[in-house]
Length: 496
Image: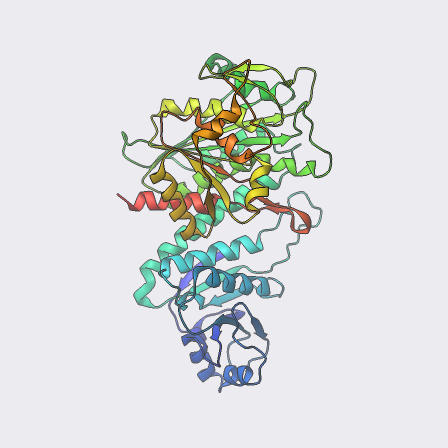
């Protein structure tokens, strides 16, 4: 969609529909009041007869506006006439776009950024409009014969007063960049495993790198990884006919000697579980086991579009995990790049096996911080559901920065403990550690495993198994945690 900031009066904007907010108790937002005056009190009459109460998220589309140049008006309930919480503001925006995309409306003038939101300015409010509208109209049609999409929306003009033009434009730039990153992440994740292979992910990274001068791409092949001693990573790809790739993205937007932020994303393009085969029911969703890798690509795209003054390294270990005569077996012992040995008790705990070597590889960049994200454990879904992603790490300041970013981005996190007592569960009689810790605290023991390879830098781990995609009737990728990571990077850029 095409987004713009407009400062002209509503009656001078060329659009199919004007969106205005109304409060409870017959109170109108400033734009609704102006439209009411120019339409001979139409909005007040509609509200007074009870067709819309002003409850938060309630909508009413007026299709006929007598004696007016405006074709349609969408009334959206804002709730009580006081500053909205960030969640209620986003609820208003979701209700708005969900109503609009069911119509034949192509162009919209949206006045909702004028709504007072507790603690947030015009930049944030405009950004939320772009992010939420773009997210709602995304539809996967690439592999369908009928490529017609549900929404007809093409142009969104976000109204703002002259005094807020600078902030509104900044929000527009950020929103469009993050929305593009989310769309890329969702598209890659929604592709099936027979198309989105490790080689395909590598090709997408190369294509992304060709678009930005500050972004360089390098692909490590299995022979390169073997020379580096990545025995843990390579053990996972042994059962697949698809060669593994270690995709590196190097974004140089900051000072030459500035330490980079390293983002690592698990890129299992399909996970059958290996010899420890997963149940057949729902296994199709294991194409989403590369959502961490897709997130790295989406976040680097957003950072490059925003031209952030940071140095960022993206690392995507990508492979399949399949059963084969040469696949990992329970009881095998691997030697990781760090030299630490690992007893494989479950071949379906493979994500940590590719991540641990990538964490060791990240040391060569002398990182300021390292953040990995992975659809790592079903235990995280059991513990936290599908609302927050799990957060664990070895540095309180980094974890607190991520939590703060999650609040601003409305991309929720919940921190879990990484106590020394949990490390005991990874003991092995035959190797330095086992790759699983038993049935208890699966998300925590997985992070404990990774922490052993992150001892030399500040590190945080995001378990996105419950948040990277939706199941059931609404099955599809969410694009999370691109908004969270983008906000973290924005905050870092603003801290200089």
